[in-house]
Image 1 (cartoon, rainbow, N blue to C red):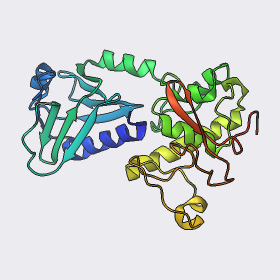
Image 2 (image 1 turned 180 degrees about the horizontal axis):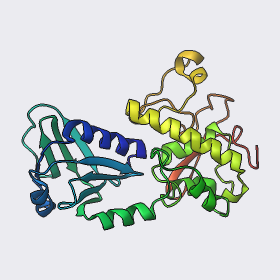
Image 3 (image 1 turned 30 degrees about the horizontal axis):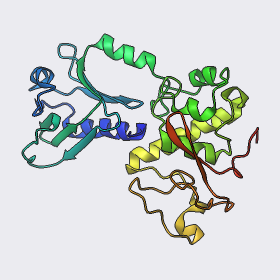
Length: 273
């Protein structure tokens, strides 16, 4: 499932390619035909993201296209004349700037302002939304016996953090993923929130996840670069059984919150740092 930086990048791309202009909308697959017919010819006024949810706004009379990619959804964006759409395309938007094809999303629906607000209300704060901060998430984390690794994946606690950012921010701050949320200090949480915001902003900018500090890059350490279809340099994510870049300890993996967790038992020891 794409992480929050991907959705914010998609919102920025939609703003750049379609914002302020009338778009053509179609649903070659047919599952969004009614919504596409209402959007067709309308002006895209705004595109925004909250966590893993994308919202494309076409004004009060039309409403919002709400997209959640889920596990299988994919976007394909291109410039120039779009190719003939396949019958798997749920939504195609075209405009002077290019085209966007959406396939296989968990959600693609035309919603009202009230329905959009209900989605925002059930989501936690998003490190990439300027108006959001660490306080609301801390209120839940500081009272919870649930592990911090599970809390970070709970979109009602923090929106937009996925498996990669979860593993990497815990490593970067030396936090045992099995520590209960209530055992974190406020200073630890504030540092993690600030770090998540910075890492995810870089993810939006570069369209990939890089989490290693400058002194731990392949060039700085004289090690081979990572070879992985997810791209980006990381400390622990999908590095099970490999040696930790910092201490050489074997990276471990386990199932937690229905996803594979990765951590270094030496750099992330149990208990407070």
